[in-house]
Length: 122
Image 1 (cartoon, rainbow, N blue to C red):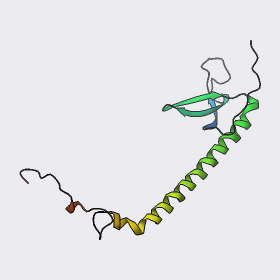
Image 2: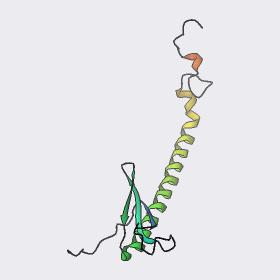
Image 3: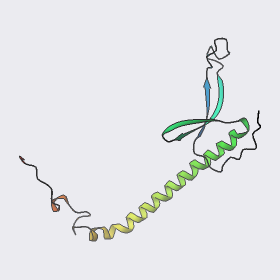
């Protein structure tokens, strides 16, 4: 059996480290009564709309868990930064928005100022 080289865990990983507990289906196994189930630690992630699982070796569980935590923290920080930027843009455009729209008294052109096709019989 070929040996696997040292695996480098990336700095950030999208996904969640979870423990699967399952029965194997063998009638004489310790898991048959449902108390001592087989466990394996996996990285759960989505790819192309499907949930995927990657079994993690014992020595990679904590590094992968830390990498997924970093991803979640960075995603939260990026969301906050993007929301702050959007708020700043909206605030900076708010005083001039009525000047660039079609109506001076409204933020956007009102539907009464647009030509709508009329339905017959109404």
